[in-house]
Amino acid sequence: MSASGLAWPAALAVIVAVAPAPADAQAASPTRTILAIGAHAGDAELTTGLLLAKQHRLGDRTVILHLTLGEGGNPRLTPEAYGEQKRREAQAVASALGAEVLFAPYKDGQLPDDDAARRYVADVIRQVRPTHVLTHWGESIHKDHSATHRIVVDAVLLASLPGVVTEHPAWRGVRAVWYAENWEDPDGFKPFVYVGVAPEDSTRWREAVAKYEFVGGKISSFAYLDYYSALMTIRGAESRRGRAVSFDIDQIGKKRIIDSLP
Image (cartoon, rainbow, N blue to C red; front, side, top):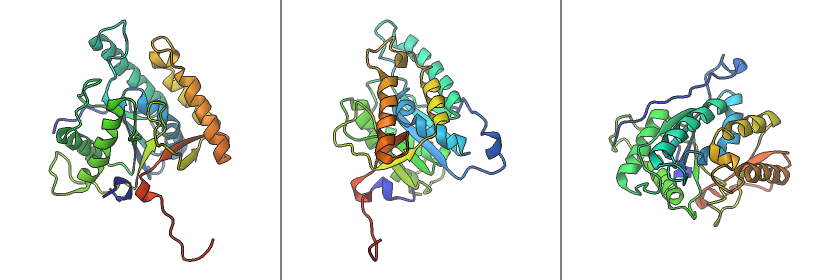
């Protein structure tokens, strides 16, 4: 069964970097909880951070789960040293976006595509109780990205099944699973859902992700900030929203049923 169609072992890391909701949203409880799951620290924020910034501004709860730190990406530092740096950066970025952040125990390039990883993520879903889950598209040039996609899709289902026993009770409240647009996950991705964002959301997002050293061009030659800023403008033009972020969904969800012509 497709995860996007559902109303859907290991100790969990402590949630940190909790930012207070805006003053005008504190009177009411959040109506949504958005869980963004990325393969490496930086993936979720670059691809979904615009939406996270917007939804936090609207009063929703936002949570980021990093399955690995992406600690192997700096040729000048050991994985241990760079991992600690990226953990600090991830906490700073989450705080700037108004999100909570969780860290899984897996290693960069070694994300296990197995049942244990699925049960781990399922228990995170049960702990966080999201209404919306955001993660990688399934086709990628990076094996951690494609593994994350498969893990998350299965984990949403496992989290909903009372017969699957983990530390937390079953959670069937996931309304949608959306797949983010990532330059490393291009094959077959087609924008299906467009979400318009305000200028203050894009400003907050740019200031937040710039806290990652690799985003500033000091580690990688890829112009991350330029690329995703341009993509925001392109998707904004396509959707007539000025600025927007786009997502794809499972093929089975791409149907519209009507009783008469609209």
